[in-house]
Image (cartoon, rainbow, N blue to C red):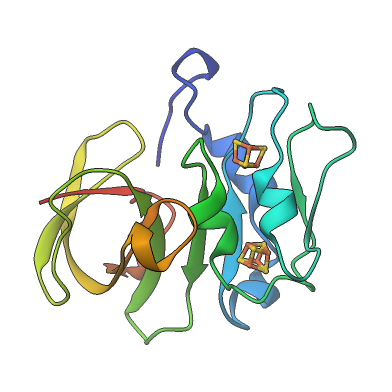
Length: 162
Ligand code: SF4
Ligand code: SF4
């Protein structure tokens, strides 16, 4: 797991544990995680969410997610300008999970391609498979890439390298 710090703007283990739903909810289907830890005036995650699952106390507050309301639609993933929101699905299979990541680089990977999964600091973790590619033309914001990852690395892999 990561051991990063606030100066790098990357989630620490404590940050991450505070963001995740209960183990029971994680077994029910996809859910969003917004790894947003800096109090800046920003709210596209809130305004993009079709179910009202994301709220803030003020526009400077970090977002809160009501996992009972989250349907895993990925709107927050494409909308967040900080590339801080992800949708995780730990119900994909016995051994594998899906991670939906915002992706700003070109070229985009292709569906079925094997790419390198990276952690939050850009370190290589393991090979992962691209399950789905949604480009920015089909969305309202960032490209979103869906990757298949080993379940034990689902909270570690947050980027890819082609
Ligand atoms: S995945 Fe969809 S429903 Fe869930 S928090 Fe993001 S925008 Fe809202
Ligand atoms: S849109 Fe992204 S950066 Fe802005 S508050 Fe929401 S999670 Fe944070």
